[in-house]
Image (cartoon, rainbow, N blue to C red; front, top):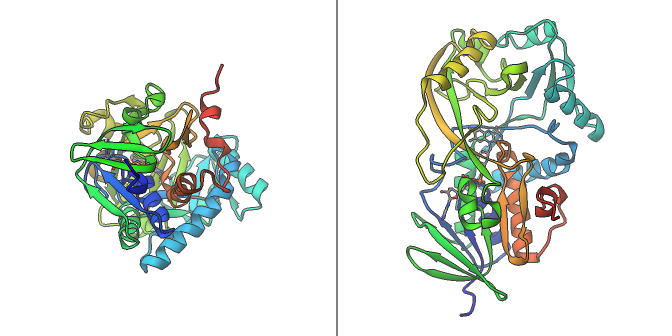
Length: 380
Ligand SMILES: Cc1cc2nc3c(=O)[nH]c(=O)nc-3n(C[C@H](O)[C@H](O)[C@H](O)COP(=O)(O)OP(=O)(O)OC[C@H]3O[C@@H](n4cnc5c(N)ncnc54)[C@H](O)[C@@H]3O)c2cc1C
């Protein structure tokens, strides 16, 4: 059967919608198939806000990709005539030897990035929302801020459709059958033939990529929103987005009151609670809210005073917490995107470009050596 499409994209969440936009903008014949509706709240890409920062504590080798991601976010905004990325600064708080502070500093120094180191008194003067310990410092990344995830996904889908991509929603892909000439994609509604397939199914990745069974682990994540007692100090401008190393309590992230629901808080990886992606997320429970309320009371007493709502989400963890973006071993017609471990959204705008390059050109000039199958799971 001849290929109807140059590329089939399975999953139109963050990475799949971006890949569809990039591939369609190059004139490729694109089909995108999504099990749910656009920008839905059942997987990993909902909840109003995602952090973006340039000094990357996780590994300085992400910085060149982040620079490209920023350029691509701005290009997306220009095409949409809509703001997607808002710069507020990101304050990274912790002891000087904490990974968040020391890793960000190393990354900033290595790449010559603008940053400011603030002692407790200077942080308290500029950002009264944060309650601080005497031995904590802050590293301000002035380029940091937040992205609106639902708006980003809707924007990528709009551009993809405008450039001729065929987008199917409410259609679950049940299997892919790759061969030497291309791939057959099988859903409840039909069969499609494409030269290449991009599998970007987030928490469900292992269902279509058996190489990732028991390696890409979905876990449950919870975030909560709080109304401030003092509305002034929680406003963007008076309060930055933040990451905070809270010692043995873990790493927390948060946002100022950028919407009506107020200040948003979460702990990275929450309780690292594995979930079965085929089942709905277990609902928010008392242990979830107690964890987040305790942090709010102690660290943001006037900015995050009254919890008004909480919700669940999903991370898909790989052992190294780096992304996996590569062809499946032994078949260059199947491209896999597993880009979560809780920090993938900010890269969506560059990962879309990478996925499109891999599918349409068989490779990319962007630096992706961190993301190979071989690096994640060396043979032998
Ligand atoms: C609470 C929370 C906070 C986060 N904070 C940040 C942050 O501050 N900064 C940051 O950079 N990152 C953050 N992340 C991570 C980031 O959101 C993820 O990296 C990103 O959303 C992953 O996108 P994805 O495209 O891989 O998955 P998704 O957006 O979940 O997309 C996968 C899609 O595939 C679809 N699908 C699945 N199976 C099938 C199938 N068989 N057929 C058809 N469709 C299918 C699903 O319905 C879904 O729409 C956070 C994540 C969470 C949960």
